[in-house]
Length: 637
Image 1: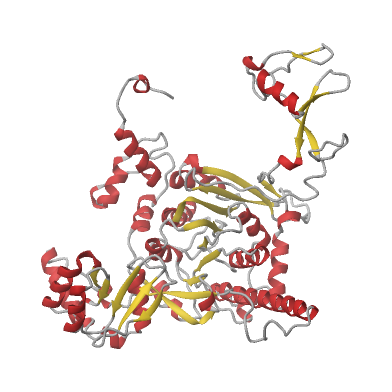
Image 2 (image 1 turned 120 degrees about the vertical axis):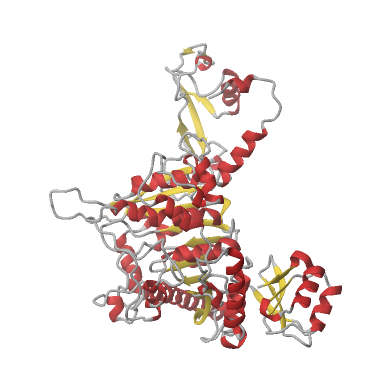
């Protein structure tokens, strides 16, 4: 709605522009009326200065704390697991075992605004316990110790229907994760969230706040079950939902491909040289007085307008008659519109998806059984065909974009991406995150040796890689046989560039994260205590800890992606230094316990290079010289 200012000859409204930028970047700072909530801004600057009861329309117990937890930095790290990785040198796919809020925080620097699509199938709020918690800390026994013991796994929170905060607990779990997830999406990115009737109404409100109501794209109703059920006095539920929100209007929903079934209404009874066609509506949907006019036929007959008028202006309609797109019926009592198949680009995605087209939960179970030799290690998988269809309306094959699924479950998203890439030659990548939740001791998964759900996530995708490689090798060898050539591959060599790297969430390598300030001392005194703590605890850091793990933590917290590579730098003879790059960022890095004077002297004349080393490795003079010569390009960690 316009205001008086819209009609005033004012100069550019910079305040409004700045507010719009804020709203675009931080939609959760604004009320449902579109006004900036200054208390939300204060929370970002200094949360301790705000002490208010939430007055936003959609509120619940713990909402403010959930937001604070979301934006509290993480001091954990991720550790590469070579033993469970598959073809790691051939792939940039990632599977991360860890609590997903903490993992998202760790990825938020490296992958900020780099994710094209997020798909998640979070735990539905069914009154059962769930293992995700916003109250995640370095010393929380429920995660750090129990995940070390496979027999126990991890259980963090309970959430039962008898709990007075039944909905609040679930909303707090989702809210913090969605707030961080939004930071990872590109401007043209999109998120899909699967959910059932228990929380779909709350999830819509939650996403309206996090992503902005104007960025709602659609709500897909998926027929997950086809088989009729016996009478129980209640409705037989055969559907779930997948809601879709874009990051901004830069997102473009792609069309789906067409089949013979979709084209069966097209024909060519008059041998039109433009090919197959069908009739289309010529009426306007809404009343438009300027589109009310009579049409005169070649024989001079009058065709009166429909109730709301024609779809086009008089001049436009006349041009369509001249080109043959519009023609008169034989008795000249009406006009007919031709829509030629050659002008139709794809098929508009619909919001109702039938199980016969995209698979059902039964199909998903059968899919798992085929991969796991008749066993079913996961109770509620999604069919990979369902996720593939989601991806088809987001990506074309000419891309190498990233899909993130931070409720990885059985790993269906990874399978869908690898199989879709195989089908159309695309190069989409995935990041899956799954908490090492313990499987039930009575379950098929536990009996088959999968003590954690994350074991299933990894094993499924390992088997998918093997399956695709086998199929590709058989196809290549068949073709080679037909051409009387040597076999294309041996059984020991992969025929595709499929695979993934596995990382695990782990406590920081730096003991300083366990430092607790003395509440009786001021900030200056506590800072001195911390320096002493670091000197005492980290004096043998490199010798006591795995060097590769230490490098990953340092690079990750300098916003390098997990697919970084390193090259030894032979020109340095007094220190072991490598060149690290992830394709966008690069730096020289040294993890030696002492930086030699010759190394410091090198950077006096090579000031264009970035350099990272351990704070512990420097005395005051060396640190001053490096800082003086390199400025912001130097980082002592």
